[in-house]
Image (cartoon, rainbow, N blue to C red; front, top):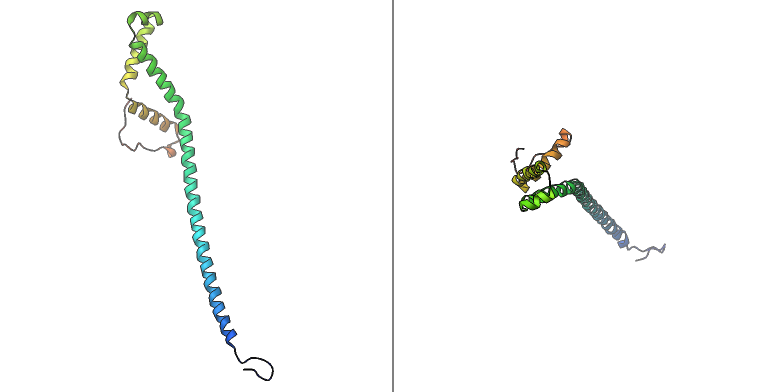
Length: 147
């Protein structure tokens, strides 16, 4: 198997080189495929995280805007309802002027006639009116309460 120059006639190691190139080519394709898969997965995860952050920020903003309005609405509803259901002699002791008592009772009548659902719609409509025209959206339910 040797020539007189000391080299082997066996050239099988050259054939192995082609196999190695095929293997390297396969690894290269595999690397590119994996890299693209991870890139796409990272992109999707980034989009998802961005949506979650935007939703959380929207919730935080909406909660901040609505909590005080809801609290004040609850105070008005609770105080007028409590006053309306007291015996007359207690109403007179708490609110001495008859005109003011009548205003409280009238306010109770109006507040009591508004359902929670309608109060939420009114609040939503007020928020929509405060937004610039391009940022407004419509109620999903399709119905709207009238003031």
